[in-house]
Length: 261
Image 1 (spheres, rainbow, N blue to C red):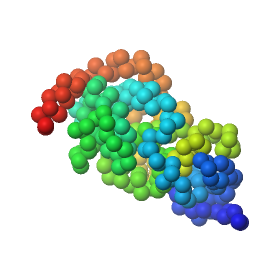
Image 2: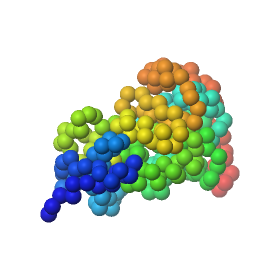
Image 3: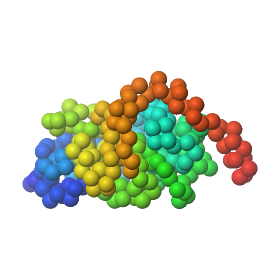
Image 4: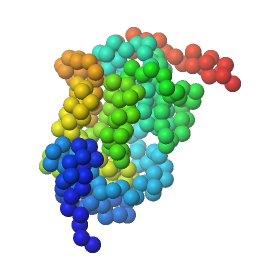
């Protein structure tokens, strides 16, 4: 079968996202394309996703607890930078509710939303159209079949998005040379570079802040890039102090959930 040499970029809609290589993903040989405009790297049309999502949380995600602990500390620091204390936060595609519960334990009013996963740990605190100051989306962007459609939804909920996705290195690694392609689970179908995020920031008229290749923020307000970098890099140290701005919701949540029954 002839290889389709170009696809439409799923981020900037450029018509000539060019074929770069193919590789094994689950039990399929999958083609990859790279956009010359925004540098987004994407798979061909992901026809294998039904199999990939037999379970919403893939079996090889062994870092799920540690990642959520790290993200909750960094989000707590970010809330200090953005002066968020009592405002409502939404964890988009929140999985089992680990991050939501951790943040409520710290003292933030965090709600949960996920179309594909059961809320196991933050029951009673689902999103129902409330005003949202900050939206978090950890390990979400690389899963998106239609990034622009999803970002339209996200920005309709909040003007600030704090998210994680590992930027793809340059030059583009082959599939066997980079673990983040997710060969074993097949759920990662789109990969971003700094230029891709800059394109999105311009499209939505947001300020972009990135710490290393993984932790990013789209913000409606300008903040100090230096403070952002410091708060993200030394997150464990600053968390000792930033968590003191709020009081834990554990007991109040216990009462609130109990009264609903």
